[in-house]
Length: 449
Ligand SMILES: [Zn+2]
Image (cartoon, rainbow, N blue to C red; front, side, top):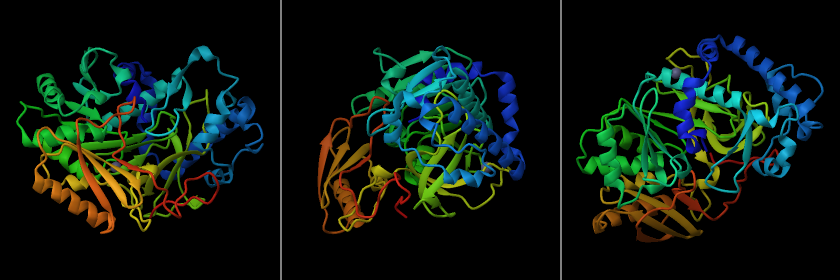
């Protein structure tokens, strides 16, 4: 759901344009003492609330007249669901912002109708500034040669990859063109381009990594891989790191521009406090460290369409510790991805991501599980040649171990797994709604432990 999903071009152009003074101004914030940063955040939040109450019709009666006295008071405001935001439409637009200074971004989620987010150009510039700071954290120079995977809209109707000139040259690749027939072509293009960094969804990079591990494809030796857009499982991280011989740095963001959570070199996810106020909500209260909850976030950048306590539908676990890197931005222990992309065993417990089933399997590049009934799943697998029967048996055994012996499963070989317009796919499609799990509209959120 990242901005990069539909605007990879802009991402690598516009970050040069992000005003140098703003970039410099936010560079030190991640090290500010905690109490000072919280005061900074409260101030910024109250400015957003005042503006929303005054200039955004949707919020006229939804926000109290007085400023919040502490960040904890934010929890007393109502949560905004995606459905509510869709229904509110233009009621969420600020009357104080001229449409000429805005653009409408389509959020490219994997489910549901797209939410159009109106953003000011300066909000987008500040988004890029935050992204640039993330690149600085992980030591990527401005002139790095970048391979970026994005949706079809980021490269148009031509060939599946296109070179973009810029500060650092970029090769932009269409994630949705990746399949069993084209994967070697992609890898050859990457080898020829010799990227310093590769930026993409785990669902694009994992098949590339798996293919790379079993075949030699020239020299692809980036100094780092940047991932976003899908939950990065420990399995996918390891496979990508091994295949490309470099560290993976993950980040979480959304085209709604409410939250930005970035990994540092010490391996912690940090909530970028100057980008949005992030809450992890479970059963209507703040999740405790170690507990999972839904990411509910209030954007601080975008005046054109303030999203206050926006329920993202993504699940995360708050962190407990300070990071050895010294940054004081709060840590997140784990980002688990979308709650509606889980797979559920017949007894109702959530099994989660299953890419780990591909452990020890080399003839399958990627797979998708479709749960068509509580006791039946279809596993679609993409393979270059035939699937080794022993490996197919391994996958089925892993599947039964996770879902229980009563599950029935069929393995089907497919040419490709279809992508959404933004180039992502859902590795797990669970059609059954398990008992006891419900996303936020009311205060009784239940999320899997
Ligand atoms: Zn850190």
